[in-house]
Image (cartoon, rainbow over all chains, first blue to last red; front, side, top):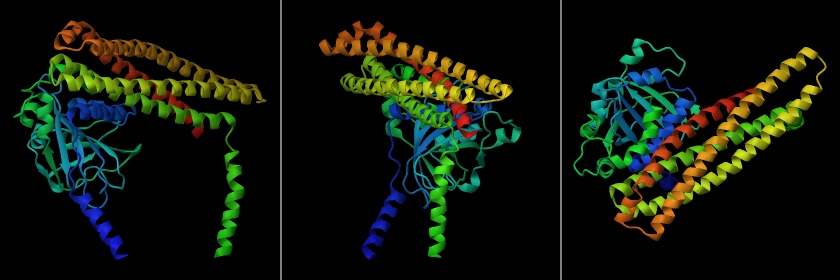
Length: 219
Length: 211
């Protein structure tokens, strides 16, 4: 029995401390398109609000510590450019706290519409989001009316768990920039998240067709 | 307490077959068809992801980014795509078969109705279901045809590079790589549109189940 307790404790500790397994952007971009495409197809996301968003975060959570205090997400951040198009993708992970997970589960997809440029910049800086510092609620669905309060929020959140829509809750969490994945994708060793989300660095020519599906879905 | 539990279990055993018998053949088949459409959608999503990997591989190949690795990954991803496409063809046939069986069962049920107005109402629903599926089927066949052409082109590129792979041959095959990349991008749009139609059909079929 004592042995079993030790194993359980060790398993919990691993779950609490392991960072999310970060993928490269060549995989994260198709994952993001698939996640967003499902929200859009099933009319779960309000496309009018997507058009107003200053940034977007698309994450998958596959942590096994959900419900006991924290997990990690793996995904991308993109910002809206002045001409209305989207910047290239910036690879990110999140650690600690919870985003969008109120009940148990082991495979959650999350889309966050970032409604303010300042919030986009905080994500790009790899900031810590304390629960009190971020206002987020579930965003309106496809056919729902959009009002000014929805545009004033930091985030409009959309969460999916194996076909079931979940409530949203924000604990404290850290955003980490996956510099290695960004350097590989853009073939620039010193690239920063700010370079990407400011639009200073364009998507490489060879990656344009692969990301076009995501851009088309965001229209 | 034990006696009570046994009574409850016996009651459940009696009720279970009775509750299953509440569904008509056509409704049971509609459930199977909706499940099959879900699986078809999952496969289409897997194919789209694999195609995006291939488009990246081709882009890296042309840009000379770790070209040998890009070519090796291209070959692996193409084989995976062909496997997934084979599963898609089988699954699409299954969806078509279930449509035929469901419509036949539904038609039989309608013919057993006595009231003329009731028969007309149900026949109208049946005709709508047939028309909606015919539109989906047409779209599936068109996208399938385009996917055959694209897969054949990707296969030809693989054969070409298998026999003569070098920076020069990549350059020579540039127009064909461009054609595959453009075709791949168009294919993604077509498949997303098809999945929209599939989802709407699935919702209608599921609605039949829930009635």
